[in-house]
Length: 397
Image (cartoon, rainbow, N blue to C red; front, side):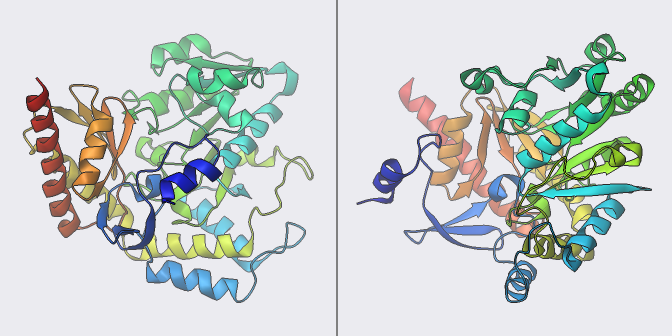
């Protein structure tokens, strides 16, 4: 029986048929069960910050697993306390607190509850953006601005309003009854969509003016991916809270809500928790991953490499490519036609893993360790994939 047949038989149909069966990885490459290697320019959807099987990651997992893996949140551990301090330092916080979970959607669930604590019944409104993606559990899904995802599971938790991602729409919507505004610095799942210039700065002004929390979803943009430790830092502001996950674990499941100033004092004992959240294994690995990103200068590297990656895409001289979007090593490649899924499969056939974020956008999110050799290989493989697609169109016309 093939792996596809086994998957179809045993895995719930909530998941689409995978593109391949992968069995190992090394650096920026992965190998499938048939022995074919691929250049990985998706990194587990912006998760594998250090690539695959990085010695720092492997050592952290093995060392901490041999020492202490889980104790519940009835106890504190040194890795947990160290990671909280590290996140607050990297975020540039004067003061704050951290609540650990196991994923991005859990971090946003906690943030949803934090928003509810800001004003209670006097502030029943929560604003989020159209096309936003904050997760698939019920609270996070209510924040997600994609009706097709929400409709099968309605009614959603109430109070969330989705507004266009414009400064004008925000100015018209916000008032003293708004508890919080949720926003992604770059809308990754929408197709690597940039916010309008000045949006975060104006959002900070308006939320402070009206007493609402500004909560920035850094699930995909955090841990150095955009060329800053967190995407909000490009705007020179400090939000009331951020949610982080993905790249901070480098492949190990972890997430966190990080709140600053007065927002950090809203939760009281017993109002939120999770059995595995902040366990010593996950936090030790995250400390190692973030420590290596810092030691190796990968935040600055992501900024420089992201510029080079955009230049490579612009130089491919394909009529299908219309431009790029995003920050650092979170890059969207815009297409003149809705052929992103075809291009994703063409790239896979050329030994390159990319993602169709929407019908007209390819998402690139390579490991932060990607260097000149990987960029040259990407240019070759992606160029061949574009040629393959053009040939297919020529043959069928």
